[in-house]
Length: 302
Ligand code: NAD
Image 1: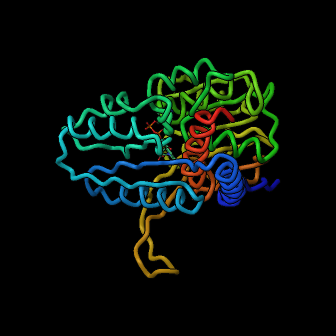
Image 2 (image 1 turned 60 degrees about the vertical axis):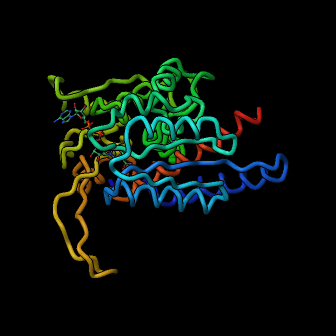
Image 3 (image 1 turned 90 degrees about the horizontal axis):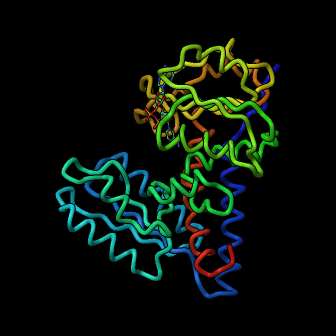
């Protein structure tokens, strides 16, 4: 059996086109566009490249985008004051503070300072609570879990009544996606099991999964024999396992592997995400969707 490949790059393009069309329509009818500010502290190369991609995507979609770069030694007080400024800025619907922050700044304090109605990353405790309650309370699902759910739905996988097993209990992937899949509603209504480092029989749980979502950060953790024939496998893991010279650019690039043994798993699963090119492209896309939603809520058209 060869699984259907869940192509995150193609699905991303589909969603970005939908967002672009909606932005145009709202601009014509209401004279407003979504506004996103990304706050970058310091010059961590990975953070710089993430923020650049976010801003480029926002620009492509016709958003009002602001990149606010601050020196690595900015005080916590000054950063909190900056967030307060954007909380009060009417042209800004989404505030994203690129993590990690330098050690002298308390990340929790910073996240808690963002207006929950502009917290498009969905990390503020108010939005974590809204996610837990679900239904119409849910405002901004965190971007990677939201991307995972979109991939499952757009692949046409039945979630209602499905056995979903999530590997990993992080606050940014495992816990929120488990909560989202158990809600009563479209793309969810599943029976969810969350497994982690304290779980006794990881293999036994994985073998029951109609939908297996793996976010452990351990290359090749899930063996092909752990996969139920025909299951939908979502591999969130992005693990650097070495380096190679890119054929395109001639530069050194990282060799990336997921948490699932892809080559063997694709012969058993019904559908599967590759790494890279599966979940990865979805995260920024869902950030854009959340920012658009923030504007729609403000305009009363969500
Ligand atoms: P994390 O390290 O915060 O959490 C990993 C979780 O996996 C932990 O809760 C741990 O209990 C569990 N775990 C680890 N080893 C295990 C094992 N042997 N058995 C059972 N459970 C185990 O990681 P995270 O932030 O959730 O990220 C997980 C992976 O997903 C990483 O590879 C990360 O790079 C990737 N990731 C990708 C995206 C994206 O593609 N956009 C976004 C976020 C994270």
